[in-house]
Length: 262
Ligand code: BTN
Image (cartoon, rainbow, N blue to C red; front, side, top):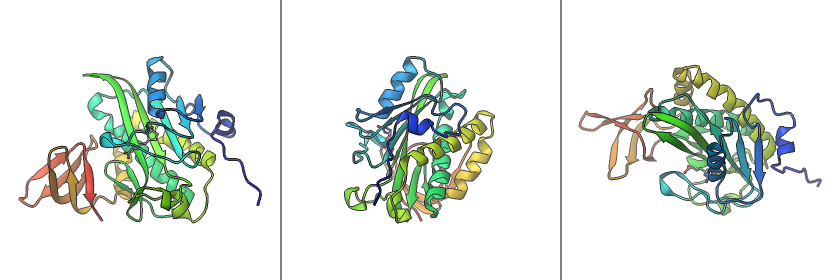
């Protein structure tokens, strides 16, 4: 069978890329510590928003909550996007939620499968995670210098080589997926959604997020120092999750992990 090349290279990504500014430029590496670190450096060097970093392999891939993100070489997507959102640092989680909506739309279209978002930004297929997002920023108390949105998508990893609870697009779609097309489509969708956010229309993004959300009904959320249990009520303007606890009180959660949801 003919092998179709699917190399994550600037020329391949640039060919037919429909964005106006996202992914321009894009830097591609065989191997580095973390695409988020590389994009952070670009931010410090003053590159304009939209610059991206891709890698075939990360030696020190990072996940949320201090975890690592491991990904087999050459099979998946490891992407970081540099952004300079005109937002207060307290509102930067809106950028992550926007990226989750863009990823969910792109991956649903690519697989034709019903994918969901688990708060805040995991993309889920049949209860298992196939994409995670880690947003990091450089900021002062009241001013954002830049934000790096790092996206890890399990594309062509075999479920056997993934950690428990993880899935891949290949598993969801039942076939290998072209990574170059995925990256180009994601960048196009994310550019449009992020521009909508910059125009001040987080409400419509939050609406799309709610449509994808599988964080509903009874949930358990693990916070830094405790767990809380109750009914998920949805997200608010700042991307925080509201939970109605059994004692009737409502609690607003900014960061944590949903352990059980539908
Ligand atoms: C999560 O814990 O769900 C977030 C995972 C984010 C992984 C991506 S891969 C590209 C970028 N570089 C990193 O080191 N992490 C993010």
